[in-house]
Length: 267
Image 1 (cartoon, rainbow, N blue to C red):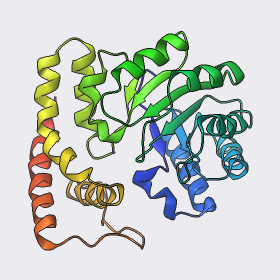
Image 2: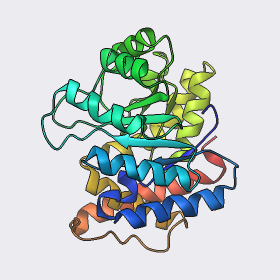
Image 3: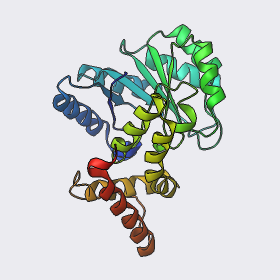
């Protein structure tokens, strides 16, 4: 996964408002359009391991290169329980596995979890974590798994510059800022930290504004994609937020600034 890949349907795709059939249709459609030009990561989130495993098998049958799923954080499960959940899904397919752990209520899984799951399931290759100040955790995971489990940074890419020196394998931002984040990643990994910071500073006001909660992020992401000409409309499925006019006006102003910089200036 040194080259770019696409991961969906995840939070940005409103996976939690899609039926299982719609999720699989998304995967199948993207696989057809990708036509082998880049890896397709199928996100197979569900609170039940049995259903997640079935989604994983069906996604692989439709051509997904990698299976991803989020650890269920609806209930305060022990790490040992999460390990059993993850192992059942890893055992369901032979393709590489990427596990996402977004835990708004606390810390994410760490080195011991990754090392034990890697021992039990060799196809567990990547973990996506989304929390601040996790450079020591990244380094601990790398050491515990002998670099066999790569760590990806999520949360819109907000912590990318902090974590490149710690050895993260990549960043998984939203679609709208992917061009900017790719340049931040390229410059940061090549040692041009000042250049990476200069690009990152262009998108930082947007990131800090929209990441107040996930539903707001989805709405603002879609509005920005409309402004960029990628989407025709910014409709979200109900229930969703209805921000006030001042909030939308500020978001659109930030979006206009990003669109103005995007063509030829992200690099």
